[in-house]
Image (cartoon, rainbow, N blue to C red; front, side, top):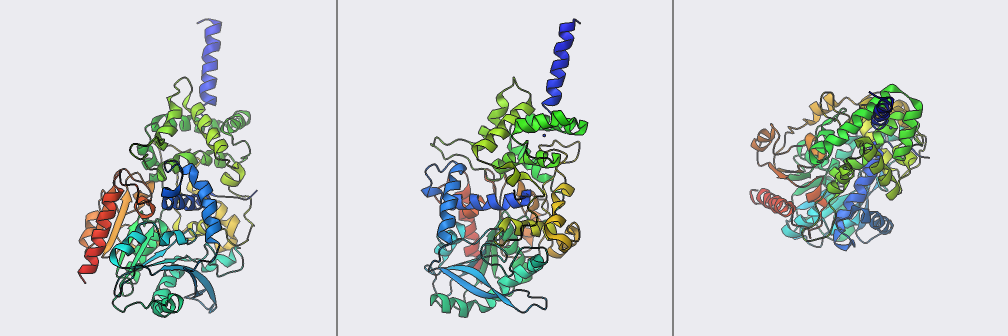
Length: 517
């Protein structure tokens, strides 16, 4: 071997090693809650977006919708809700509601949608599957804002002690308390009287779908039926299965896994100059914490799959998965270089501030109200977990092994102090709420098989799905080419990838429930 050959080999080895090594805080749970809102508003308004195949157009639309919903509408009302249903605090707070009685006929069902981890929006009164169901069945539609979201805050700040009333139990009892008093409230607010024959059907997507299922389970005397889209019923603090679904959806998963494997080797080696050079290549040089850097690399992949929809037939829309994997067609680069170029372009093109989007600690002492992402982060710290982690070896990983549950839960105490006593006891939680085998009847469970959250939900390919169906009148629907809450929020104009079939089955199931009683 010549000296030149040796030099070339050493250079190649160094390139491979280096190519495989990566304001206010926004832990991943906070960012996810914010992105969920942008996406759902985009889906609801897809007909009015210039390029309905591009989620990028949702950003400007979100600004428009936010400005609009801050204005009081004729459909907006406030209910005096108890701050604490189970403790000694007997004070009340104003909880926001939107009500559409336009399609209601005496005896028709009442569809109640608790908006979960996003602010309630009047958009849902006139678009989306709950609206479609109400219109088709002579029903009333009520949108209810979850406590600690939107403007429905029972406290004056978001410090640790002030978060104590943000519990699932209080949220469920909020709904029960409202239903018990709804007849007088709705009549006084809208002039419409709810018929004694009207049955309550809880609806929701994602976390709010969980709420719908749990209301049916714990309050069967109040809730007649439920429709749950993409409900992650199984709490988990080590949710590595999310990564596996993302991997199955991406044809370029082997190249990404190759890049991440080498990246972890670089981080293990702890060569500061080399790590910093790669942070700069990714556009993430401002992140001092190596785990924050590693965690940021999951953002684009996760969002591409979780919020995926195929382009409309006959359109010139870009397939988001194909566009992402196109970066890895450049075989002349090491996969890590392609991942770095892709991430840097994603950050640049979307105007992302890495410190705001990916830092895990700064800003923990910002206790101002109206931080919906902070509320969701508290719920994950206190009860749910839902931390997306790297799969254990020897499973293929699309995220760094540094993306652990302990890294994601680490900021919990920093944000909320002694109000968070440790990692949430998801075993006890799942025992109480029954995980993937809730004790329910008359529930429609819907999932997209491209949805990473389907691994925590009741899906057709689940080994226990037959048990859920056999409990009585439960229906399980799967959309093979759809992802997260697609059926719930999606514009009715798109019928080309199975969502129309799913919605027909949902309506059939709801009508069946109503006709049997």
